[in-house]
Length: 286
Image (cartoon, rainbow, N blue to C red; front, top):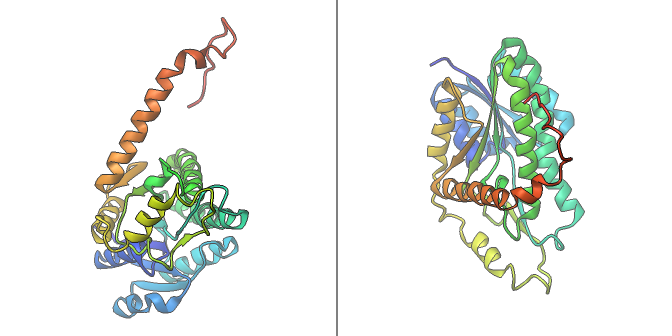
């Protein structure tokens, strides 16, 4: 198996940490991009030749080019980019403010977009590369209380689907990973933000708040197993555009697809009637 060079954002814990450990154990090289370098210092100490710790805030679009340049200076190539850093805000649409919504968009869309743009020239030049976008089952289906989080992940998914078609001719692959609940610390009190509940939505979202706050450490997903799957796929000949991870993700996303198809079919006759009569359907390039 040919060694690869990875950039992994949010590598201090959770999926990012598990991915870094799995890739390094496989003999790969890893640039662990973290806000606090001391949080991943043990990885560099264990793998001094193959690991570089880079101070990096995934929301800082101006720093993306420097991160890629530092990677090339140290390892002379970039094979896999993982946009992993993320967090969630829980609250009703009327409760979540503009600043919180924009911060999630910066973290889950604008930051990853800048890093991808910085990485693409070197991947294009070599004619190979894999971009792994850590999305969520909440990037394909949503529910009350997570509008801001899902909005940012839905945006990442749409952006990445277009990206996949644009870069495939250059030998570059894109994989959206859509996990269910994993023991990553995502539901911990220092990551998951709950907005102040209003009288209007307090009772409506009470069970959702309690469920999300109380699941930390009890999730069914194993980050180490997930990381092994992702690393194996990155080394393989083919990656899926979308990869649900965990039984819950497979079941929930499958239901969402079926529900959406049922709804399209239910309203299809009315929807078709919006066209001009007698005008043939457009011929599209896709």
